[in-house]
Length: 349
Image (cartoon, rainbow, N blue to C red):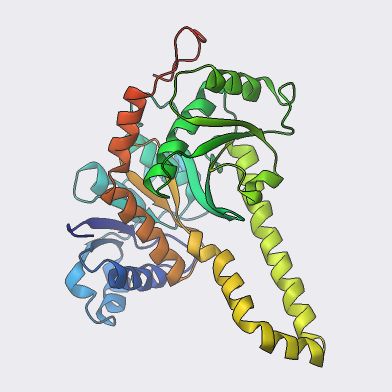
């Protein structure tokens, strides 16, 4: 990163805030020495933490507020009563052009509601989506939506496909990413009407994207496609199931290696390979879900992450800002329009 970027941080959001926010910013500063951070939160708590980290103070400013959005706050209440909260002020910094991205580990529903209200959606996008990238057998893939929209019609799913395709090219650096619709089978007759209609719209459009067709749950980890498109209900369950499976496997492996002398010896022999695998599937490495479709860059960190995970979320925000992600979405929505002859109801914009 050659140009200086300012990142707004919700210093009070998350299970271990503000400590992990400050520590995460310090780690991110090592990777992005030109970055500058706005810490929005209680100065009495944030400043002592910043002062303990050599060099961080020069890259940090504190915007004091005592108001905080908690995990128990409903999105509607947070939107009405949280105008001076650390989360809202950090979002407003992006809206007002004082920051290039906002990172928060706070309440997901409140973050989505506030960001949508303050930043608005990109013209042509009806609903923003939560997107993130996941490890697969073939590398990494993008999945959206991960929980922002429980019910999605075909038009929304097509918009997700467009945004996911741009995400894959911008963040993952893929020249021609493939797109698949998550379904209960790969046959054309399977699935609900929304999914089947979205597939038809993608197959018969003039979108210059590579639509693979339907995929099933096991195709996610396989890496069958680069972009997995689904509604937020299904996507969130798939994500949490994958996270739980990783924890289950890790627990079984740990138990097996510790239960016998042979297992302990085997662990010592296999330790380099095990550490490499652990790093590959470490959820902190993939921390940082993006609220795509907004007029600004908003990154949601996992609420229970540590400093390394939060630093990676900051890195996602910086990478998206550097590559002009929002402008690319706008350009693609202007250029990538469905063929009006294919389906009169299939217009993206």
